[in-house]
Length: 458
Ligand code: HEC
Ligand code: HEC
Ligand code: HEC
Image (tube, rainbow, N blue to C red):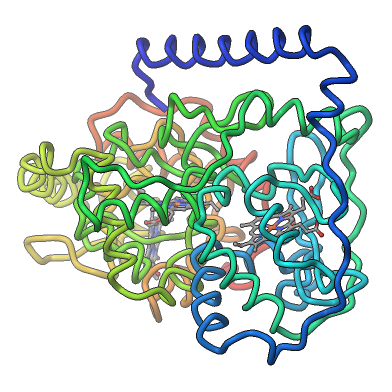
């Protein structure tokens, strides 16, 4: 991601300061003091409350809090076979080993059935399990700490009144010494974690604050869209500069976003609500479930508030004047490069044969459902990851725009073919420098797919 040099430095200084503070802190309090800081008591188990104990209104509100936090996305197994919802065992591959999410159904033995509300609240606020174990930040408690007490209480009511599933998740593969949680995780928190509920910013209106509350807390957009340091913590001085997740690039959400059309509040709203924005394209890959399975359950005003917040983060109002010219340039680039099968340009012929039938429109402007590639971020990011991922995976009917699909080219195109199409599109649809090592990168992206996609075409 392109990062201004001044920002890079301030980031380093900020981090250096916190490390220094932590080292000093450790020196002063010493080993015993540190353990006292890191140690949390177990909170007494309770017998599982009956579902009727919770008010239906609280359960209903809690369901929305769960939707905005994608709990089911990380707490439902997907590898090998699909597991029962919320019963955990979802595999997260981290640079430190595999971590399997916990069962958060109200099963007393394998789930959170014997957790009191106070124990649940401590987990959300501080990342500490009922028995006092320090939890890994793969559980995004660094965001959930911002969720209000009322929302946490409703969320507890919702989770505890769901069906209990008896399922013990697999053991983590985090190696020694990183697996000594009381030292590793507590030190991590000292360096990188600021606990505390979201506080309204009086310089902004209620809608902005609602958007910021959801985005920074429950919806944890930064968990994917903010780069992380070597310790796996978000670099807050580079907030929303973009990051790589499961091979995909989660693009910058600030004014480093490279798409020619600025993400306005309305484009953001369409994308977050329906999974497709007319002037940008579709939500594919890890972004796809966020609109479809989660944000679409929220009241429209909440999705609008998140859009309102990010339109401010990327300074859309100041920059959107460029949009009309950007659309005209994109349409011109695409039209100019429409070629017949007789062309001498072999790359253009390949694109024509594989892609152009769908990615062409004769209308004067972009058409929903036929993403205008000259405007799509897959061509404008620093690396071709997303373009390759879209070619390899395709886009299912339930992803991106509803009911509309793009076939997978996993079997139909070789790495060399994909490399040529990527080079061609970058050369003809953008004015950016060419990508390098394309064939190698195509092979790397192919290797991230453990099994060929179901709809792979030939
Ligand atoms: C990005 C993935 C992710 C998301 C999203 C997520 N979790 Fe988790 N969660 C995890 C992982 C991984 C663990 C296990 C951490 C560990 O072992 O230290 C976990 C652990 C927990 C625990 C501790 C359980 C125990 O037995 O120790 C609770 C409670 C929890 N999550 C609740 C939630 C709730 C509620 C939501 C939605 C608001 C949620 N999680 C969303 C990944 C996630
Ligand atoms: C699990 C990781 C993940 C989370 C959480 C996540 N995103 Fe994304 N996001 C991605 C990925 C990956 C892409 C690229 C998808 C594509 O190109 O189709 C993306 C794309 C986007 C885009 C399109 C950017 C562009 O220039 O094309 C926007 C806007 C966006 N996300 C906003 C959000 C917001 C707002 C949230 C929180 C409500 C959020 N995302 C949460 C992973 C995530
Ligand atoms: C059969 C029609 C069809 C073909 C052939 C096709 N596409 Fe697509 N493509 C689509 C549709 C439809 C979408 C939008 C899907 C959605 O939103 O659900 C799409 C979306 C995309 C996107 C946008 C993804 C995003 O995250 O916004 C890219 C990039 C893309 N296609 C590239 C290609 C390339 C490169 C080729 C040739 C190798 C190709 N497509 C061939 C129909 C097609």
